[in-house]
Image 1 (tube, rainbow, N blue to C red):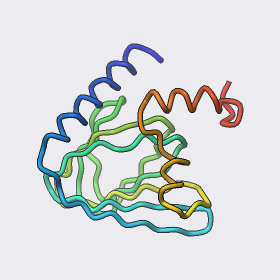
Image 2 (image 1 turned 90 degrees about the vertical axis):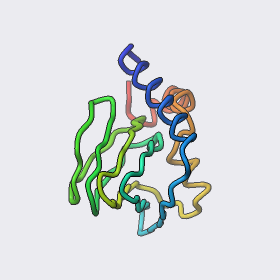
Image 3 (image 1 turned 135 degrees about the vertical axis):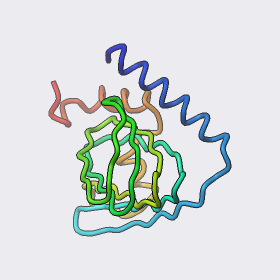
Length: 143
C-alpha cells in the first residue's frame, strides 16, 4: 500500500467518525435476491452524508434515482441517476445526496442470510480487509 492510500484511508475513517456525531438519517434499505445475485438498495434523502462499506470483492453500483457527490481515492465526482460504477475490492467511498437518491449495490453470491452475507462480502475495517487479502491472494487470482 502506498502513502496516498494510507492518507485516504485515514481521511475517510476520520470523516466516518464525524458522521457518527451527526443526528441519524432515516434511510430505507431493501434487499433483493436472485440466482447467484444479491442487490441492496439504499434510499437516501437529500442532504444525507454517508460512507460506504469495504467490499471484499468487486461489485456493481447503480444510482437509480437522484444525484450524489461521491468521493473516493480517485477524487470526487458527481453521479447522476442511471450512472453505473464498477467498484473494485477494498474500495470505501463517501457520499453526499444532492437530491433524494437511491443507490443500488449488486454483488455475486448464493448466500441469502443477511448476517452471513455481511461476513462473506464485507470487511469491517481496512485492517480486516488487508488481512483477508493476504490470506486469500491465491484464491482471488492475485500475485
